[in-house]
Length: 478
Ligand code: NAI
Ligand code: MG
Image (tube, rainbow, N blue to C red; front, side):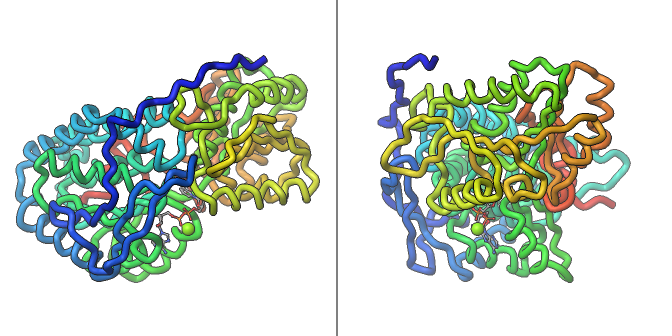
C-alpha cells in the first residue's frame, strides 16, 4: 500500500533566474554575435524559464581566442598552488549556493529535488575539491615524468547531469593548467550560467573558463575550431561518432563518454530486497536519464518469480510527479524529443512481443512524463534489449549459469557499467573480470566518488573521467 504524503515542495522564491542570459566569454557576459536567443523551459510545466544566447561560429571563435589568451598570458604562468586556490574557491562557492543550484537544476532538467540536492550538487563540489587537491601535486600524479598542460579544452556536455558534468569536465582541465570553453546542452543551460557567475565571484582570471550556449551547430563549431587542443564530449553515440570523424587526421586530443545498456545481474543467493532496491535505484530514479543506468536486468531463473513480484510492488509505490516535491522519486522527462524517443522504443517492445508492466500512477497533465515501466519475456535481439532507451524502462531477461549471464550481459555494442548481486565474493571478482564494462558495482548501484575513474569500452567511448585517470587526458607527459 502507498502511504500518501502531503505535498512538500521546495521553495523557489530564493532563486533568481534572469529573463535573458548572454554568453560568458572573457570573464563577462556578452551579447551573441548571432543576435539570436532561444527559450529554455521547465519540462515539468512547459513554462519558459529564460532566454539563452545562441552562439554562432563567430561567437565560438571569440570564446576560443579568449581561452587561448588566458592560457598563454595568465593561467599557464600561475604557480600550481595559485591555480589550486581558485579551484578550491569554486568548490566552496558551489557548496554555499547549493540550495539555489539544486532548485534550478530541478526546474530546468526535471529531476527530483532529492537527486539534485543530495547527489548532483554535492558531487559537483566534491569534484572541484578533489581536483583542486591535485593541482600542485601533478608530479606525484605522474611520477618520474615531466608534466605540462595542453592548452585550450573544448567541452560539450549533455542534459542528464548538467552541473555535475560541467564539474567533471572543468575541474581536471583547470587543475592541469588548461583553459576551457564549455558548451552545456541546449535544454539545461541554467546551472552552467550560475557556474559562470560563480567563476566571476571567485575572481577567476577572465577567459580561463568561457561558457557558451547553443545547440548541435554550436557544439560542431567548437569541435572544428582549429585552435582547440582537446575535445571532451559526453552525449549520444551518434554525435560522438560524428565528432570522431570530424577530428580524424587532426592532432586534437579527444575523449568520448557515450551511451550504455548496462546489465544488472542478480544471482539466486543475492539478498533479494536489497537487490530490488538497487534495481529501482539503477533505472527509475532520475527517470532513467543516466548513461550507466541498469537498463537490462538479468535474473537467475530460480528466483525470477519473487523478483518480478517485488519489482511490480515496488514500482507501484514510486512517487512520480512534481520534481520540486521532496518526496518525489521520479520526475519529468527532460524534453518532448526524449519522451517521444522513449515512447517509440516502448512501442517497439510491445510490437516485438515482450510483456509490459507499467506503474498505474497518475501523471500530471502538463509537462513530459513517463510512468515507470518494465518488460518481461524480452529476447536478446529485441530493440529494448539492444538500444539505449534513456528513460524509466527496464528490460528483464533470465539466465541459468554465470557463463550465460556473462555472455548475455556482454552482448551489446556498449560497455559502460554493470552491476552484480551475489553473496559470494569470489563470484563478484570472477564476474568483474569477464564483464566488458568500465565500471562494475557489486551489491550496490550508481555510486560515485570523485576519486574513482568512470568511462567505457566499445561504443560507450574512450578515456576516463574522475580520479587520477581523469587528469591524464589534460596533460602532456614527457
Ligand atoms: P546529443 O549527443 O545530441 O547531445 C549532447 C551534447 O552534444 C549537447 O550539448 C548537444 O548540443 C551537443 N551536440 C549535438 N550535436 C552535436 C554536434 N554535431 N557536434 C557537437 N556537439 C553536438 O544527445 P541528445 O540528442 O540530447 O540525446 C540523444 C540520446 O543520446 C539520448 O536519448 C540518450 O540515449 C543519449 N544520451 C547519452 C548521454 C550520456 O550521458 N552518455 C547524455 C545525453 C544523451
Ligand atoms: Mg541530439
